[in-house]
Image (cartoon, rainbow, N blue to C red; front, side, top):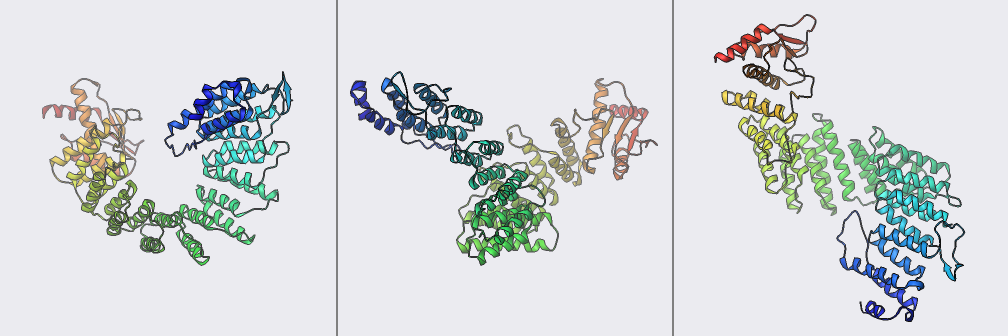
Length: 589
């Protein structure tokens, strides 16, 4: 600050450029913009770089390329790509026309040395553009610098590709690779291909990664462990059925070529098996890592436990399911013994595995163990534990977990609500389930809303309960569901006189029948729909047809009788005369 004050007091001609350089460089120090972490910027850094820009202007005719470069670098470090680009443009204007392709360092125009911005400074601005996802600006600047005779080299492209990889910008990475391949005097290297593959892998473009992998092999490049690991990572993130097996084939291939896989390579292979539900192969890979004395980290253990969880959910009821939850707990014990940190994902996956095997007590114990490890159970962990209790008809522990979740200020989502309602349904808790429905429908509860699964479970629970009160609750739930557009939607093909019940559960279809006839009677009384017609209920030629026929005959008062048209065996038809008789009967009640 003292140096800045002295510079401002002294005349421009009295101060050498080197002094300006030193002060400007000091003002531009700091920065370190990280867009993903969104770290709070130091206001003094921004203030000082503005002072540096002010000093640059005060240099007037003595302005130098070095001063411009320091300020451009300072702006770029702070993520201020617009200011970095503006300063670069000013530098180009001060030291020659940006369209002058013959312009180069050492030229003199009107007694002034012409200094084309160096490749490094162009690269600084290009990186700033890429970090800010300003890829159009980045490509424009690449074209512009070429016109000035400044050619990007392979390091330029690799720097930009690294940023594309970190932001999963696959299309931009592929575009940069294409430019690099066409750039005169530039030959893409293994880093170029590896980084482009990484961007595509994170962008879940497995097929593109395979193309790049083959291209690099065909070029005779000396492949390394990072190259293979990146290709395997694409398989781990892939959605194809054979993605996991492709990852293992790559693992075998690199071993055959004498390329030793490292911890990351095996971690990616385990993740691929986990995503593919191949828990046996995942555990085999862990054994291989131990045999090779490779360290197994949290992420790798989590991938193996996730494989067990997926296997347990997929093969629920199989004999293997009983083994899987025990293996998940065994892996957690190994982590504890080896001093490997267990995180919320570790516990959530293990809880899910226990839940699929009906081991609700183990799931509840894992929630307690999480707290014992100083890990705050998250929404996934609580929901998995509640689901485990629900599958074992354990209402009380499920309800307790749900309340613990809310006490921890974790807002339950639709999955958590539906899991608890499932527990209430299996434990025959109609009052509690109805209260859950009302809670979900409260206007203040804006973050969650019941879905068709909720509706089906709530009505199924109330339908099995005895008494007029529960019948009224069913009607209230159904009416609310219609108002919310969950069922009998206005934008469906249903009309007042033709309704499709074929895809509904029996209890919901039963409630729908009462609602439909009640609505028709009310509209007729209010003369909203005076023209009474034949009513068609589409049920399908199945048990639903006979079930609905019984509901209309035995539950509606007066009883409603229907026919099955010969040409439409999946439809029940209530004739106009019967409809009028029903409507008149409602008026007499």
